[in-house]
Amino acid sequence: MSAEPLHHHDDDPAEIMRMLPERWHDQFLSEYHAALDAAHEVWRYEQLRELLRVWRLHAIAVSDPMFDQAERAVREGRTEEFVSMDEVFPGWADRR
Image (cartoon, rainbow, N blue to C red; front, side, top):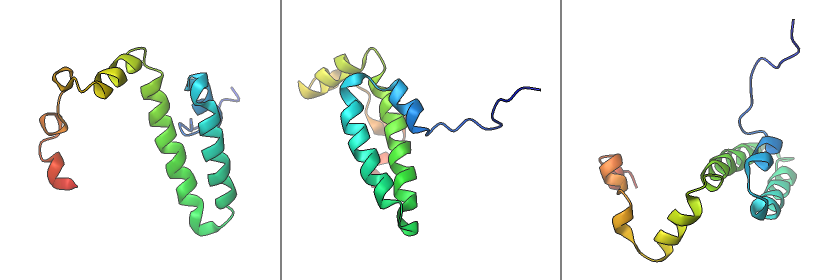
């Protein structure tokens, strides 16, 4: 029998750090420590979970080799290189 965990926790801060390019480490750690300190208040625990969820998604995005190129295209206003949210998710604008 293996000692493997039954469930893999995707929002593990160590896993997020592993995925993140180094340039994001300081910002993640700063936000994580602030949220961790605040989570001592029971009613703020969900904020810690949400922060980890958002950073995991951010880590997935920024670790993609094409991220820097896509970010540059956004900053330069080259919208023809993107698909609108309404094309991908019809009615997206109505949900805001």
